[in-house]
Length: 420
Image (tube, rainbow, N blue to C red; front, side, top):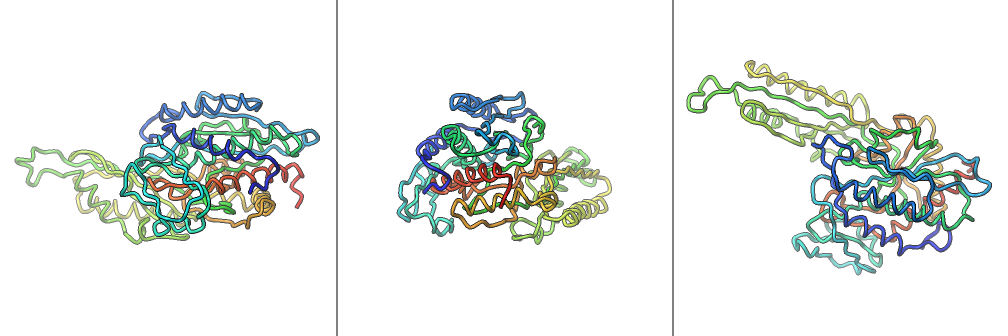
């Protein structure tokens, strides 16, 4: 199965993955610390220790929760470009993140009932990509948590390949910098990372889905916060006086056009998505995310939000309605298309690993979006994870092994100086 060299330890890959997903690393967007949750430190410290034990060099855990390490260049490859491999340790906010991993060996194709919540059933009907998984070792959680394959599959793959390269100095490669970061799921994954300490000319995030996929384009993303200030009054004699901020917030959300919602969009269509409403009758807040592949499309979605807010101001002049936008990340394609070498080498690595490469525009973002914008070109590579952010999340061990082979081939290709 493994086409990235000899003697790859697939059992080590599986054991690592199962060990990592048992640690609750759910991030918290309301926290002001980095990492945003204490549980992330538990996995970061474990990775720091394991990297030291397997012989990596320059291992450090920074004050903001970035684990950095080096796989040194092999003899004769010291002049090769330095590349980086990234994976994030946090899991999404929707569900608990301490999984009980279940390995369905040589899965027989029948529906998988998750035992801790039998209403959660994984099947080819609700996860069509399972159609290609019979006979593979499918890993799930038990039904009431995330599995955490997003992105502990990436963490385990990077760790297993780093160990493999350290054990096999006959595999020619340049210096490889590893980075495990917190808080990707809340959009802060690399905000406090000093890229000079990474020291790479290009990098890859291991945070994608199906074998062969290379994400070289992402959404551009903004956040919006709308503050509603009403007029307070005792409800017993509020007629003609009270302006209820919560009702205004509800009217605002209801007025957002449904054709511009995640529920009604696909492919290259962007959206405006309310993610949180909070407050009281006097003051309320609506938080939104805005997404589009192109900057003019993102500007149009800002205009939609401004228009709806303006209409509410006109309808209720006694209220105060304020709109604030924050840039989150930008489409990595804007930078990668100027120098496609990291993408082209990823395609070559896929082919050497026996896969058909597929360039994908991902309806989301990765840490690579910000890394690329900051000057470190970073496409995203598959790990085999599916149904992420849900209790039906699953990953195939064989697909993780394919991703490991791609990393080995990438290391070889960069050592060859990018020669095609």
